[in-house]
Length: 215
Image 1: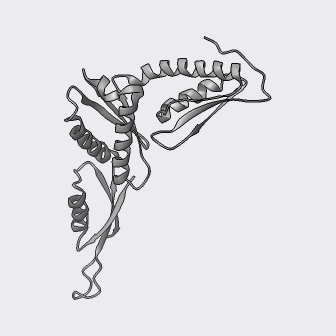
Image 2: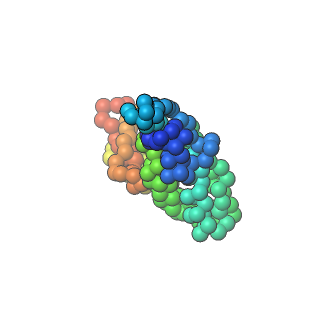
Image 3: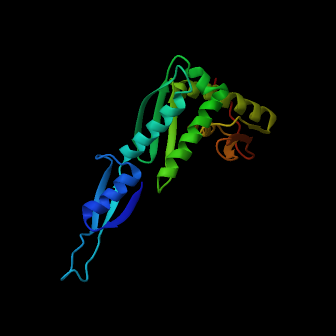
């Protein structure tokens, strides 16, 4: 996800430069030696050592944890539960008695926080990383709500042969809606806008047989 090359009189010196610059801990990086370096003959024709320091995922997990804890200090009654990563996606779990305030109406505050964390993490990485926040099992509860919202929208579209533009959603929410829409003939869905205000449009699709929406 990130690698930095450095040179020095020795391999150890080159590695130390990167470790100090990025405040890396011992288990957060691996080293690939590009050039061991040499003193040359009588001090002439010497070569500097060159290394590639590869950052491991737990570096990003730690930095994300430190950054989030600073934010949550301002949100009383909410704390970090865990951070884990799977590939390029980092899953953050937070909870507490005041979690509802942090989620906000329709998850808008939570969406803003997720967007901020994504920006922070991607500034540390050479490749695009994703952050997904689950606040007090919000994702599971939201999934059930989305099923109701999507089916109501599909009914409207099929009855009026027009389209419905839903409220902005997280990427995982949009995927759920798209999957629900695929079950029914006569409707199609697509997304519009940019994050974090991207929306799903459910639209009447001509030429397909109409099928009622199951309750």
